Image (tube, rainbow, N blue to C red):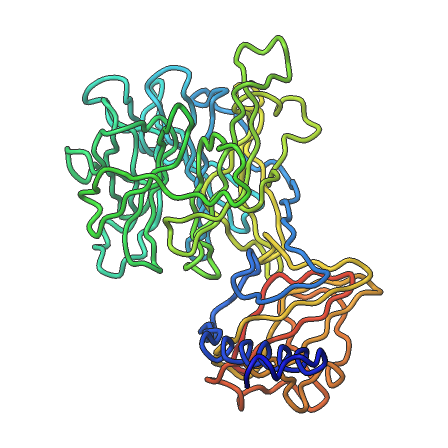
Length: 483
């Protein structure tokens, strides 16, 4: 068609519409949306990784509810600097290790245990002598301030590596003289010895923190997260090893800062693989603000709270939630520079709740460790207010028979779910009109349509999910077998 033939304005408009539509179709065909293989793995909505479009909904961070105090300073080997709790669920026992003191050496590691994660005891272990007696809960003594004094400020973990010898089933790292970290091993988490005289992490950079060590089951490697500095700002470094004997010099983790806000001091990190999906690495860093002061009579400047971030590879962390995860709160004893600190370890304490543990009143004589409670998977939700909203996922490839949701609505709220093909076309029998409104509060609610909940016919092929929410929160989803 020659330009002379486009003098008619209506014809020009029609040609423009045709060309534009053709270009859009060609672009869609050239760059199809790749399907995400979720198989039968739990998917938390901590971010928009699964979400293609959102309308009237938002991601909302949830803070733990402060529950009871579980550990108090009540022994002569404990002082106002009791700190750094580490909690694991070990079979039918919950176990905690914590730094009992740091005002003056030597420095002790204490032990406590619980049957439910709520009521804790400090057993008399008879292992380490203190003031002429072994009637205490001490499992290790060290002093990093003198050469040969032994490591301290331990981070203890149970090694999930199937190739680890049973006499080294429990491992730990601790700060040692001159910097760097030494490694320890134990058959039971109580009786410890050095894994070797040499450091396992070389003394390059800053280590004056609670360095977190763990077995990363998703990536099958040992990991240490420790302190770092860049231009005087506290940062987090990471090092990995396949043998726990020799780690390279730690490198800075990458923290996304999508809003290009000022970089914040992140003091400690409390790195924790999520127990329901070990691919997801959580962190609860202490955010430190060195230029603020709440109590003019307090000798040290600064304030702190706790923030939340996460990673899918253990190296790049998402810091999209800029608000506090745990605030100092109404308690004035938490309004100073290092008052509150979360320790590594998120554990289930019922079918519907999980707990983490954090220090309060640091440097006060009534320093204590408190339990914080969240609903299962309840770090972040996709939230809709009363007017309602919706979101559509990217194409997903799943394995299973049915879709299960962790959700909560008000009495007037609801959730509906629609299945779409990869091109966003509703699938017959699984449209929005086929899905009765779902309301209530459940951590594992199967989704049903008029013909039932079985989705096996769609397993292995890309489908999208459309969620329509009203005054509701959606925390996680999972495809599972009806068994």
